[in-house]
Image (cartoon, one colour):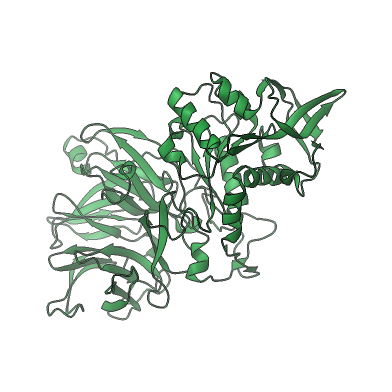
Length: 585
């Protein structure tokens, strides 16, 4: 399943928990719509899904995108209120056909758009359910001729004009109710229609060939109304009862790098509850607030200890306040739920007076903290959960640009500490000689010795993750949100071969966000602040996540996409890279 996660719009901490939904299926909640597209750029389903998401998310409609017809199965479809199809899938398997027909017949919504009327041609019943089949077309500008203005789908829909393919249909069902026509001389071609199917509803429109229609306000309003009608009265009522925050915006000193008109504005802050109404999580998951301001402020890194407590780095110095010695205003805090209600109620400052710490790793009864220009070891020796040991173990880390310093420390299967660094790099002592490197991956022993540069990356690097087989992945901030490190640099050096580095493996550029209100300096529309690469190796989430899906945060895009909310990796056998499904999100 493909999905998106859009974290909160104010500074607080939320945790996603599987199945423990705070929005019951039969209570007030957002609508969940699965969008089945394809990989072709002809009839660009990825672009259309992105446009729908930005247009409809604020109104409570979640769009989850897939290009895999195998996602048409009972277990997957069960969590959705409706299904959009905009693609060119010529045939449908018997199991997919049954799942689709049962889904709609059981009371859910079906929204086939444009080329969907030429999909699944081997199934007469699906063609009948759609209400007709594409036969031929030309390309022209034409107005929407509204036949049933009184129908709920046509409420407030203008007779818009667009340039689109002029569909002619065949096998038109007797059970459709035509809402709009395309009129050409004496010919009146049904162009938008609805029909019941069992307990469900079908909305179809032939509009939607390309950008000329994708961005037409009339088309967008028509499809939105079609979705709300197709999902049925109960689902629509659940959405109407769900309170969705509407952020407000004011003029302010916001750089306009993309020369937008109108220029971007400053968003007012939201409460945690308001922010949660503006977050999309995968179907079957829910959100639970664990901690919020003022108990936790500006979290930049977190990790759980063996007691089930959450350790968090709070940084108010990042990125502009570089201080020396013990003069920083940052700290590491332990958050604990002592009464089992799922909310943190005990907060202990483990260490303070830090300056732009970026990550930590548990080791030797304490933690190693990445805090350029040094890595430091902090330990509590008297049991009060406050660090009373503080010593420097590894120096030489660059801090010329705090956006590009060392981060993401992780304990490796090889009993070494692994990490990444951006272009601020390292320039210091190695075990036998001086050592200098820029953006890439490295490792060192828990006592700070045996520092080794492993592989270079293409740019500023903040993401690192391991599979269960200890395959190594990374993400860079800009335009490489997933990379694979196969061979450490030392082996290339021994063979006198130019090192390969960490190879880019993501398969798509776009970040796919839920709001137009973003500000990016560069890589517009793509990943420009990717951080983390946490491949899911636990067992609390469904099996589809196990060792296959990674989470890569993107704060500029306000999300932790997973492909989707992240990166989906498939493996066959040990240590063999097989597939990267980067179009998933």
